[in-house]
Length: 324
Image 1 (cartoon, rainbow, N blue to C red):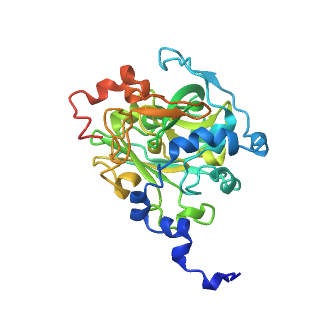
Image 2 (cartoon, rainbow, N blue to C red):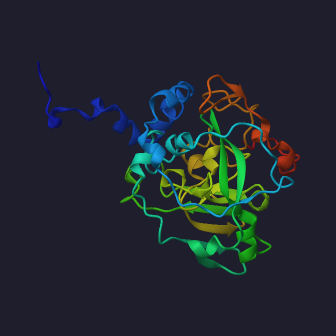
Image 3 (cartoon, helix red, strand yellow):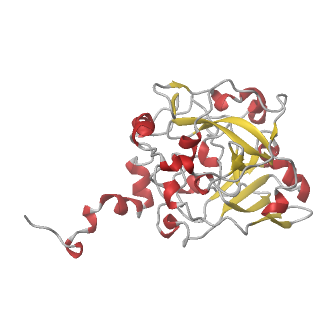
């Protein structure tokens, strides 16, 4: 039997790494979602060892959100184990079940967040000072991934509007841009060409100021773990999950629509708005159905992820097929 030495092995035979290093081929190859529904169905059975269940953050002093602000959910919450061990965080890995392990030593203190651009009072906040701007509260939101899976997550955070009011947006401000930390020494995939780094996202100012839009510092009553976007991430519950930028270090108010990572990578697949809309298919799969992690079977996907009553007016008169 012939055993090849490492120097004899062609790069073309090492399929995953070669695919990762070419962003466009990676996107078109369908690795993002190809068998996501099957993977989600089998995940709980095979991918969650007992050890991760002991991974915990620090306990938070959490208030409950008022029902007149956040529509109550009767759907079962996704387990802590699943939320913290089935993760999209491409800075660490494209393998959802590998992110928690690869992110385990990510350093989240000290941490600062700069808020700048078209504001009256630009400021760089120490994380601990930023988290004192408003009491953190628990909000149980649906989370829908563009790949076809979903969760119900008890996030802990406060409305982004509270921070934006602190810096006083100027009249010319129409958009809010976000940027993730760039730290290849800690985030191994930032040394590859999977995506353009650092990760960037954006919202319209009225979307950012909506009371459902959260800056999140925890879940299940404790601080975020690295794989979930520690120490601070964005949550916009009516949009697909990739809009929820993680490990934020900079927020910039601007008059122009900012670039966003997935739109730069594949503009025909990932639009700026990225609202959950089951009537607009992804070019490579339908968005009409979803699989809830921890459950078998599929369910119908709801328009705006079930938050149409709260946010539908933001898009009055817009063509949501053109502005996907």
